Length: 218
Image 1 (tube, rainbow, N blue to C red):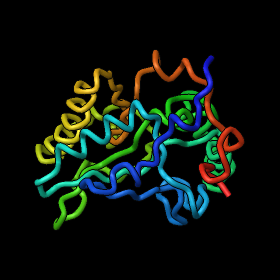
Image 2: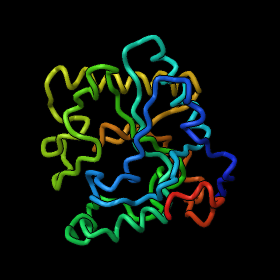
Image 3: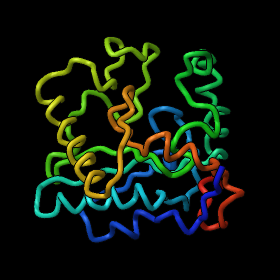
């Protein structure tokens, strides 16, 4: 497997500073929905691998002149952060989340620890977040399309489905413009990632793999 050079990771706040984007790094907040405690350090930033960063940039540029902007919640999630998540009180109080089929990924699995997944929503500049049928990071004990309101196939109102389609179209068109393919995680309407054929080539990153200024946890 290949190692990701830290120079391949992009500071999204810097890259998108003049574009219609709001960054709300969810796991740097004490009151994040899923874990209920802070995971990232106070100085943590949202980093993405350059291949995904370009897709997000193009998506944001397509919103210039409109009343909408992207809201970015999470990107690179190091194995250090993933381990901290699994050790939170909330996860310890819900051990079935870690039983098969797991509701939370084990450290190192997936695209987030390679900076190749982005958690994103859309908001109107005046009216706030668009209704996507659930809050970001909503976790259902039933991950099926009928039991999980965050599932992409859950039957919501026309308004919710139109809002989700707007976000999907933005991201997919941007990926096409970059010559990339995106995987839309079925259980989470907010998760867009490069495909396994791309991210599984790379070793997942821990905080120790990164310069001090790029590490996610204190």
